[in-house]
Image (cartoon, rainbow, N blue to C red):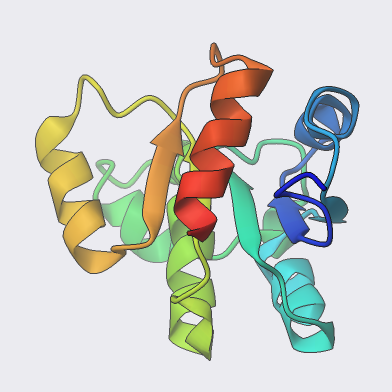
Length: 154
């Protein structure tokens, strides 16, 4: 029996790329999908999951579905509201991660699709705050994803 069989993975993304890739190339778990923080919270309230696979960038959902403080993001971007929205979209995964942790789901192992290799200080801060967080780059292959998923779930 495959170690991922009977596991449930919640994929939080604004498209279908990760769901399609994981379903086709990393078989075994049952995959659920959510397209926003609210939908992810609904899914986690409905049932337990063994792992969350989280996209970083959310530029294909309505702005009303983004979490985070747009006014603060705008202020920190010289008062430019468009740059504020882009910041929320480009970092939405981290805002969703915070919302999930705040709602009591911080113990669920989470893989975030983003390459932090050029941002080691940022990664250290995130790792200190979210010890069950692991980053994966988009260039990773199915065998590596499977191994990372298994390690993250213990």
